[in-house]
Length: 215
Image 1: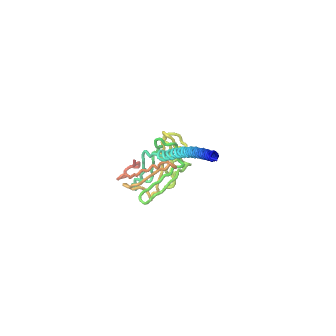
Image 2: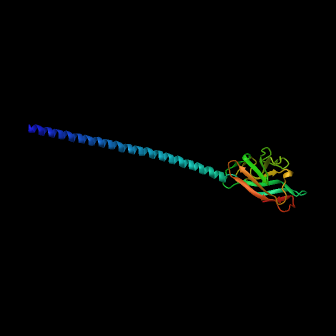
Image 3: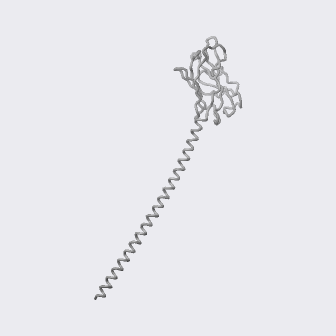
């Protein structure tokens, strides 16, 4: 009887030990699954982070290039000449010697807009393509205040302004808006999506000659 009870206790103890070993095995497998899952989640997160970083870097480069083009592309006005009416001592015809900004890509002159501001008076003018690029660009051929034209001074005669080319832009005002001595005014050229060239100008104190250098 004693031996039977002893064997029963040993059997129960062995069963309990086996259950404990199985429990530890199950817990070990569970921990392994959790560990592997953690690694997989971290790997997926790292992949997403790398892709996101790459996209952000690419977008930043595109924004940088677009910003650079807006700052660099455009026209530069080298000098400003006015033609005077000596009888009234006023200026109504203006020439702008113009070239590309340093580092600018070629500019389509048809995309260029010209603005003129004097006091409360402001107007915008577009290129007359039919008389631009050749000797047909004259003040007499222009419609006052609505349009401008250009004549090449250095380079070819197409409507694309490229590096190392010089052009003269011609623009005229109505006589009712002609500039008097000491008048302040502003002229600007905007090349599409490029930078705006703005000049703040002033006519001479006295207008004595037909050709007046303003800048």
